[in-house]
Length: 421
Image 1 (cartoon, one colour):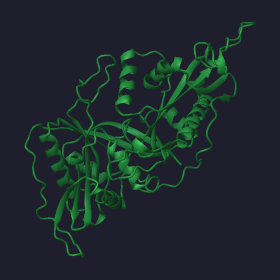
Image 2 (image 1 turned 60 degrees about the vertical axis):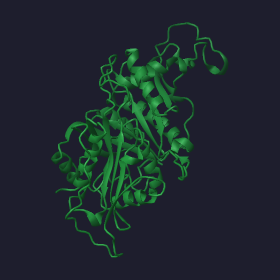
Image 3 (image 1 turned 180 degrees about the vertical axis):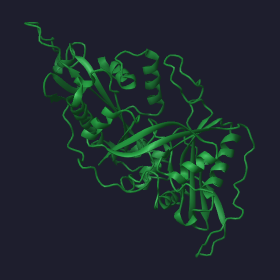
Image 4 (image 1 turned 90 degrees about the horizontal axis):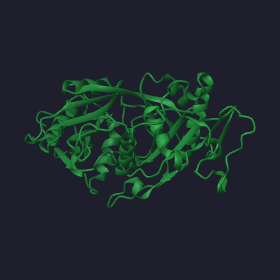
C-alpha cells in the first residue's frame, strides 16, 4: 500500500500550510516597515484603504470588480469574524485622473483626509488594485490579491511592478507584526509563544500569471502546487477500531506494543514529536521546515476549523511516535451548501478536513497511513460527517496515490507562494 509521509490540510483563509522541510531564504528578504503611503512613478499612489472604501476594496479582492452583491462581502466579513480575524492590512492602488484645468483640490479635514474619510488622492481617483493581509495563529498570515482584469494597474510590466510594490508593502507590514495570546491558540497547560509573523502566503490559480509575477516582484517564491481533494462519506456508520494487525515494528527500548493516544496537554509532547518525526525526507511542501517552531505549527493546526482534541490521534510504538492524524470540523454550523447572494459554495456543517497526516520514516512502507486514515474516516462518519476534504503537494506521489485509492477526487489546484522572515 502506498504511504503518505507527510501531508498538510487544505490551505485557505482559515489556516496555514503545515510545515514540512527546508527551503533556502528568498533572494529578497523582508524590508523595514512600510510607510503609510507609497508614491509610485506617474499618476499612481498606494496606501491603506480608508473606512469609506473598505467594502469596495474587499469586493475588488474577492471578484476583481469594484461592486459586488453585498451578500458576498458580508459573508466574507462574517467568515473573518467567526475565525477571529479581526486584524488585517487592506491597501489599495489608485490612479489619478488627468488634470482638469483649475478644478479645486478636495477639501481636507484633520490628518490629511477629506470629510468622507478618504486620503486626498482617493477622492477623485480610481481604485485599480487591492491587497488584503490577514494575520493568523501560528505566526503566519494569508495574503489576498485582487485578480488581474482589463488594464490591471495600467497594464504591462509597469502594472506588474506597481502591484508588486503594493504587495511588498503589505507583506512588510505583516512580517513586522507580533502575535501572541489568544492569537497563538494557547491551551490550558501550554504556553502561547508570542513573536513576529514568520510566513506570509498566497494561493493563486495556476493561470494567474500576472499575479505570480507581481508576487515575485514582492519577494515571494513558489512553495508548491496543491491538489485539493474531497471524498463523500456515509454518515452515521458505526466507528471502527483502528486495525493494527500484522504490522511489524522494531523497538530497541523494549516496546509494550502499539498505543493510540488522543490529544491533551499531557500528550502534547507526543504530538509535537510525531509531527517533527514525519518531516524527515518528506515529499510534501519541502519548503517550510525550519521557518517556524513546532509549537507555531501546532497552533496553526489547532486554528483549523473547530478544534476538537478527540479528532487528533497519535499512534505510538512504545514511547516512539509512529504516525499522527489531525482532523477538524470545518463546515459552518447552520449554513447551507451555497450562499444565495453570491452563489459561492460554503462547506455545510457535516464537512470535515484532514488537517495533517504524517508517518515517521522508520514506520513507512507498512500501510500505516492508509489504516489510520480509514479509521479517521470511520470516526467522522460516526459523527454524521458527509464530506472529507484535504490538500496535498502534487509532488507527493505516495500521498496522492493513497488518497485516490481511498476514493478522494481532485476538485481544484492552487499555486502556493510564500515570503518569510
